[in-house]
Image 1: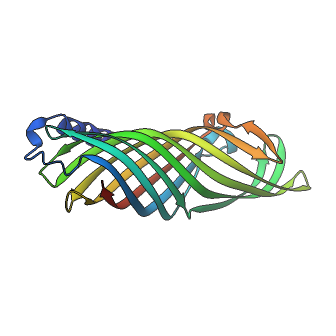
Image 2: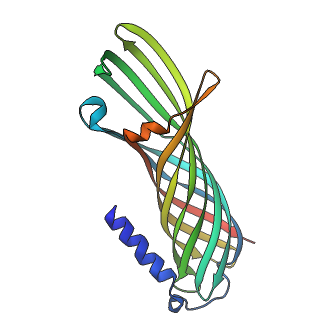
Length: 229
């Protein structure tokens, strides 16, 4: 995390330096739409206080989506706003047998990632009239489906629920303009969730307190192809 923070700071400093720009021909100005696709890793960790040991698991899968935004480039410094709708094929399965909250449990659980919404800003600096580097930050809202089956003190159960999670996304990337209308980009982003709500049997419940006992993060590396108008 320290290395990532240093990279963000370095790129932000570059973006704030007009001397980076060699040309301000407008290759990065205006409204754009794009398709994105890449690799998505969902990472879950549970604190030692819950099960007596620290547990963690992660699973990767294919991510894909569409995005749109508007950029303004002044003196080689870019400022933009963007939104994105994405989905994911990530699924995680795990099981636990032992004592939990003074009960004997034997459970199997799964999490299937769903749609992911994002809205944020980005700040960049041109390296040339066709290339730039940028950092980004904003709000992300992800959906997932949980299912759990097993026994508690010998009694069987089966539950499922859908949940949404709110969090912060940070990212860093590079973009290349083939022309004033076409571009490609590569981007890494980290989403850190800190609040959530679950729906089960038609009832909604705040589940934000679960983040006192563990973390839910996702790492993504995506490629984007887009058009400017």
